[in-house]
Image 1 (tube, rainbow, N blue to C red):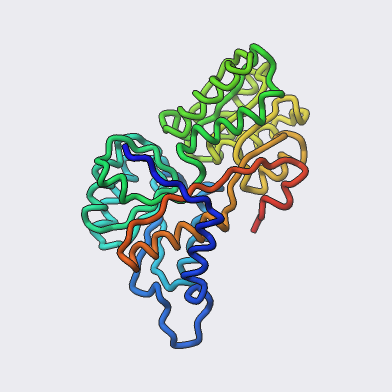
Image 2: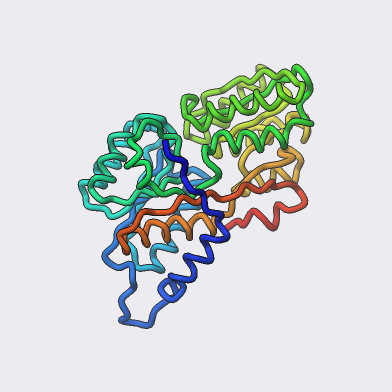
Length: 328
């Protein structure tokens, strides 16, 4: 597979702003917006209540509206086969571009190939697909965290949590979909990191679904039955929120079972400030939303291939949480 050229986000922002700043500003009444007649569908494998994808989609819709683009969003509620079917439905509907995460190695292949062959622009918001023909792979754009997401997020969490977990420690890893690549990669790299740095750990993956209330209940039950766990780590954004809520429900002394995951909502802000979540990781939502829509739009508008753009992770803790986590 041909290695993608990764463009630093800061360079891409300058480029896109340079070509688009005059168009995304609010036009005078009656002036046609440059994106009118272009349609973009955001298709998500997760839930509409997802504390990551929901707010990000809201921001993407704002950017799309500024361009004059028709923007739609749909959620598969954790059903990856349904997610792939949604792609086929949007292709049949005549959509110009699809923005979507892809967390399964093979289930999306036919839909992606069909989309590219039909001229539909694909901008991935996470991409763990394998086995695509090189000529298809080279047509796919990307705006998201470093890829593969599960590996890089898991590595950051391992680095952040290493000092909090003793040798021989037990880590609970709640998962929305245990078979998802971003879960499997995260578990693998955390275990490898601890081993390489002289600690043996046991990682227990807990199936929590994409429903936060169900996830919270299952985590509460697990901790109640296994109070000797040493930490919680997860690459899943629904599950880190559910984990922090579970720690609050159980009224566990902050720091007793430290949690590590992505930090995007008020739940994580509260957990970081209380000490339940010593550190988290995130990327900048505003950059992500602007670049994802702009990448898809410009590819459709100019008939060119979309860019592959990886946004950097930053570590969030009690010293910078109010600056980095911008709540609505």
